[in-house]
Image 1: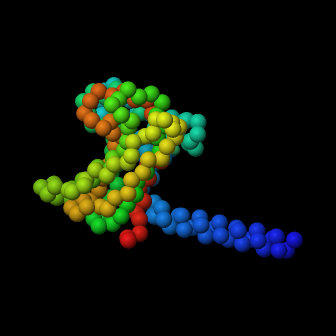
Image 2: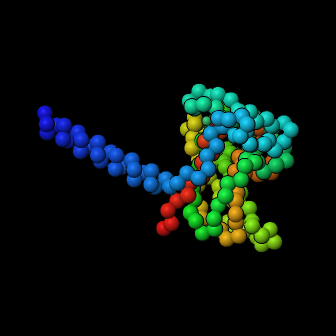
Image 3: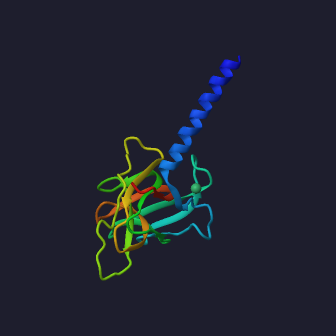
Length: 187
Ligand SMILES: [Ca+2]
């Protein structure tokens, strides 16, 4: 009986170690929008008059998320975050956003970008648009899309956007949640 308990405690200890290692890998959460507060989190704006964004409740999420629905005819993105997240050149980051796509008429599935903004606008920023992979329509359901990047020189902040993949007409109905930016340990 005691031996079994010891094995159990040992396994629990290993599980805790694994969890803490994972938390360390994920880095430090420095920005999070979970779309819970109408006053502070409704900070995504549509990129056309035929697109609407609304904070709603949705099965499978805790609390609210953001509905993005409608048609874009002349933009690179469906909607974009208004809040900027501060970043520091040379540091490593990873961002992620959860998304569920229900309807889509577009050249390809959507993805996210983090648009880095120059401190000195006269000087171009290299690799200024780290992008996530596209949503997988075959799998469907809620998916967390993420991308790692090293912050380039001459950068001080960035904003998130839900991308079409071209400047074309596209129609979507989707929900997004938990926009997160992590600062990763330097390699
Ligand atoms: Ca939420």
